[in-house]
Image 1 (tube, rainbow, N blue to C red):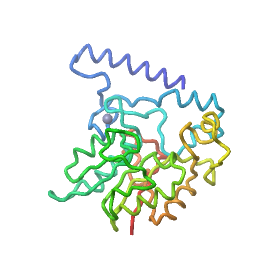
Image 2: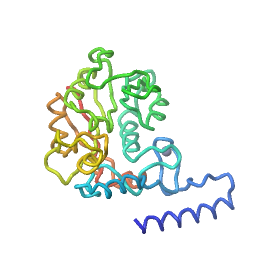
Image 3: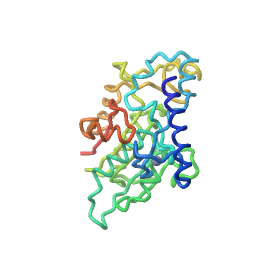
Image 4: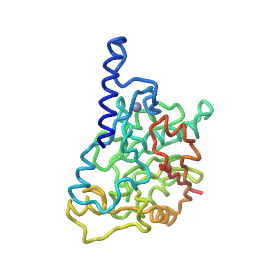
Amino acid sequence: MNKNVLRFKKAVHSFLKEMKSDPYKLPYMGDNYHCPVCKTNLAYFKPIDFELLEMADKYQSVYPMFSFETINMFKYSCPRCYASDRDRMYALYIEKRLGNTPAGTKYNLLDIAPSELKVLLKTLPYINYRSADLNNPRADDKVDITDMNIYENSRFDIFVCSHVLEHVKDDIKAMKELHRVLKPGGWGIAMVPINTSIEETFEDDNIVTDGDRWKYYGQDDHVRMYSKKGFINNLQQAGFKVNLFGVDYFGAAQFERHGIHARSVLYIVEKI
Ligand SMILES: [Zn+2]
């Protein structure tokens, strides 16, 4: 961590120097990285909020901090649009998969509990965007993911459901709802925090206090810690075909350029 702080200080120092020579250049701009969400060339990505590490330490997290599958602790968020590393990975995938969509074709996309990625999704000409959230009044629809009765069967071509299911008690019911509202042939981004140090998903009804949830689930509003196998099994149980895309698919240089850690994996589910 100290090394990182030092690196950050050094970077700030060089921005200030650059600013003197070009006063119109914003401090985060540079040539080292690129954010595919806000399309900005960057000097750096921001490290993750220290609070996460402090809480893990305070409540004695039982998991090794660097065994989460998709998270870049040291290059976490874009200093301009705040997109996280996973948002950047979704942006790369969506543009890779849909970038050549013929003019006039539009896909209905459902964004569950929208992240910063929504800014990009709303600008893409081939996306008809709709957002849903249980609590956020700014979302288009107020929806409980385990009962999305306001949407008819096969309403959407694509969904984004990122870092939602680890908050939901009946996650398989939620996955079945995602499957129901998707068209046959449709696909979705389904992501949760996954800890690669465990074989089986860990969930225990006796874990109810905030402290215990930090300790065993990694956050006080999570209800389980997924293993890779456990998450894939649940998605398959809900009827999805699951495809994984990692560094071999995107390329090491692409991951590096966009601040995505080499161990990151994108889960794309399909309704056959
Ligand atoms: Zn950005």
